[in-house]
Length: 150
Figure 1 (cartoon, one colour):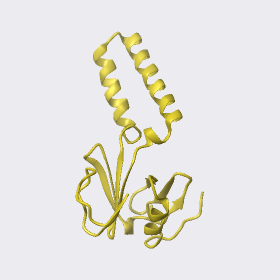
Figure 2 (cartoon, helix red, strand yellow):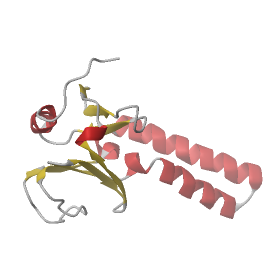
Figure 3 (spheres, helix red, strand yellow):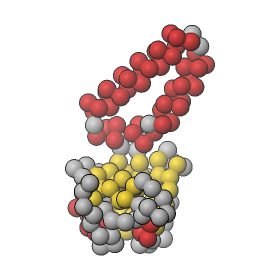
């Protein structure tokens, strides 16, 4: 985790007003869950191969499943700026969410959940911790009010 401008060493260009940057890799953080997920993925692909006897269909299924689970399989880059939160994985899938689009924050055991304002877009931005969670919480709480757990 780094503070301030640091170029693009982790695949995310340094946005204007960068305050904090880090990378989280869920596959490495949760080894038991990772093993179960990989086993289930392999079993599902085995079923597709046996049922349809098509290597092509099995490969397409593998690409679709790994793509759907890409935030778990591949690292996620986070950048907190004075304007909002940037997330990116696989080097090009990502989004920028301005502080005005976020309703608050909620602390969880291994992440910080930032719910979106319903009038703009449903869902939430989830910031998984890596390294120093206190600095992440400190940066977010200066910009957003804490929300009650639901």
